[in-house]
Structure formats: C-alpha cells, structure tokens
Length: 223
Image (cartoon, rainbow, N blue to C red):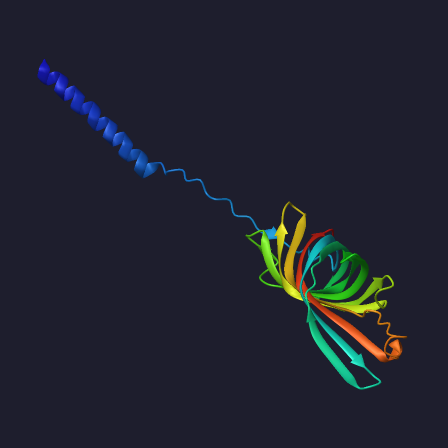
C-alpha cells in the first residue's frame, strides 16, 4: 500500500514536470515590449513659424568709450553695472530646411530703469533629425539688430547682439518650448553735456557704453 502511494506521487510529479516543459516549448513567454514612438519636433508642412516668450538679462561688465573729436582723443575705462531686467518678445521665422530657421524678433525690455525696444534678425541652427525618439532637440542661435531707447539719458538708437545654445522640448502633442541661454552685448549712447564746464561742444563728443551679460529666455512655438 505504501509502495502504491509512492508510485502515484511519482507519476503526479512526472506529469507536472512534463506539462511545465511542454509550456516552455510550445507556449512562448509573453514579454512586454517597450513602446517606441517617433516625435515630430518641427512641423515641416508649415514654412513659417511664430514664437512668443520672455527673457531675463543680467549684466556682468561694462566698457565706456568717450571720443573727443576736437582733440582726436579717446578715453576708455571699465564700469561695474549692477542691474538686471527682462521683457517679452514675439518672433517670426522662416524654415530654410530641417536645420536652419531665419527670421526677425521684436519686443519690449525694461532694464536698469530704462525701456528699450529691440528688433533683431535671428538665426537658429538645429541638430539631429526632425522626427526622433526623444522629445528634445538642441540648437544654436544668434541675434543682431538695432535697439531703441526711451528716455532723456540716452540717444534713441543703440544696438544689441547675442549668441548661445538652446534646447527645444516637446511638452505635449503639439506644444513646443525653446529654452535658451547665452551671451548678450548691448550698445547704448549716453547723452554727454559739458557745455559751460569745459567749453566743449557735446555734438563733438561720442560716448558709447558696451554692456556684457547673460541672457536666459523661454519661447513658446505657437505655429
């Protein structure tokens, strides 16, 4: 009787092992595959693009250049600007291809208790394919153009130039955001009044200030 129970137990164990082996051979294991998606970071069907965003500027240094035309003499000295500010921008761009976008950007700035209106030409150079498995795409940018100043302390027309690196992030199905950080240099021309002090005509004095700093910006790609 004891021997019969042992034989029956061995048969059950054998059958269980045979069933398990059959499952391994004939029934493939289910493996959850990672979903792979391709993200479109630049809608190439649209040649024009519109962006809206803002930026923050922090000045790090300033060079002053004063040229006296009467004496053909130039005085140069450094300054320490302690100011920062920011503003809002609207940009229009045209896609020359999958990697290059040119356009114009304009907006309003408030820095050092001054109001400014820059209007610059823009250039963006993107890297990597337009359609990719990542939501990010890196680029370099450059800006150059005139900048208008409002107030009595400075002459109306100045200039601004900037260059840096950026990253485009696809936050949703169609929502794209450009983060950028770089170097910015602005030119402003202070009014110089020395009449009655040194008997010099202010018209013959060319006073320029070059301000160097860091620019951080964020732009939403509307179209």
